[in-house]
Length: 89
Image 1 (cartoon, rainbow, N blue to C red):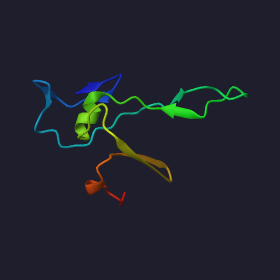
Image 2 (spheres, rainbow, N blue to C red):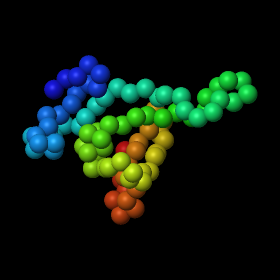
Image 3 (tube, rainbow, N blue to C red):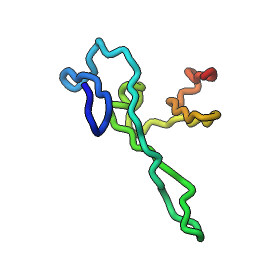
Image 4 (cartoon, one colour):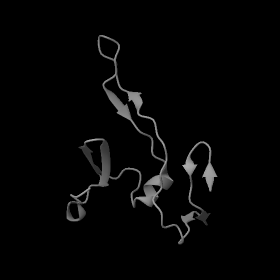
């Protein structure tokens, strides 16, 4: 299903993702300014809003702790489970 505001949204069945949903979810997001401005009026922090259906696809829930990796041209968010940390991206 395509939604203009959110992009691709998988079909929901009784509030749970359909079992035939196998592709990763991709939505275009904006890095929104966050926090206080400095003396020059510039922001130095941003945030990204993630909907609970996006978290569900990733096996996460609101309130989970995450690891945030910054690589050349990439920001990777991964559930903070030390036993299942993926190092190769």
